[in-house]
Image (cartoon, rainbow, N blue to C red; front, side, top):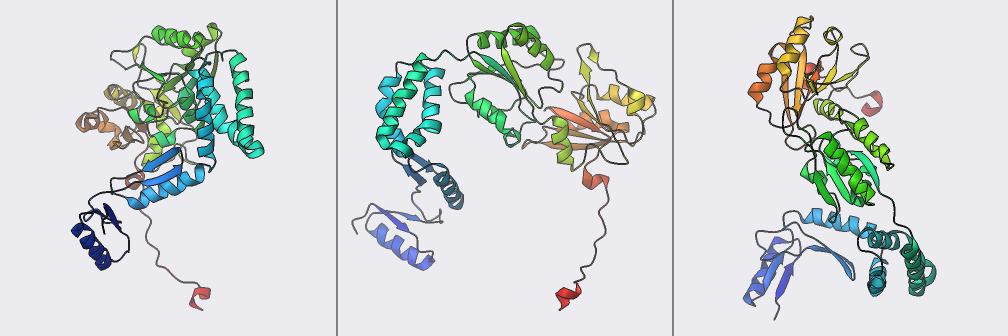
Length: 400
């Protein structure tokens, strides 16, 4: 055979074994498709848009998944991408006249995702080169884009729960100032060149001062950076949003707010429960377990009424205080309280509790991660009995 590599792809165990034996006798290495155990090497699935090449590998663990990803990329990456990349490569020396960083990135982004494909379709490679010169002239004389701040809700932690707008802003940001509760999988969505600055707050623990956070946002935006202030959950729920907006406004800097999914919504979803329900509660309270002065006081008498539902943030350490206040104002000791740690994340834990034993249940569960208390809600399977099974009775049409 005089082969170096050999593939068995007959979907026939005996025939693949025969080919493998012949190949090995000739000194070749063998790959049997969908048979990692008998393969001596693996090859990735390739999406070829020369000179753009994408390889998808799963270390042989899931070839079907690799092929599915390949199909998706084939559909998403236009056949003309390789031609655009070659033309762009020939133009790189011209673009070096633009300042490094955002100016060059904006130029290439506009070329590859807006003007390049259009010019190629309308005028061929000559049209692309003409369009590049026009685009370059416009970017060369353009004024630097002013800095701005986007207050972005990162959601409860699952990257799939980010809004499309949040993903877009993370991809465009020069600087990301993030809370300590924003997990690594979300931070990894930032582009490689972005500056990541951790400036979080922790109840009863070391924290960045609000003035330091405000000054950091203003300083980077004044330098022309596109800044994302990335806050866990929704930026407007216990996120000190107004204080930071006031500082940005006072500095004359543009800003926007991009909402995110708050922890109460994610935690209720994990319970299979609704935060409001006809006949049970027509209002919903979002509370904090502590504020700048310590353990927070609330309208305990209203919360103690039957059917009340509340999402209580930052309440692990103040659980005994909450428990005592509610019981003192007449709350039923059997009221369900679900404690959800790391809502929506792979390490999420749900601790079903009752008001009478809330503090003890939290202590026994040993919950190091961020947790929210859903007062008045229990996991659905524990809260509601299963409906009795109804025997299947085919209709007359099905009998016929």
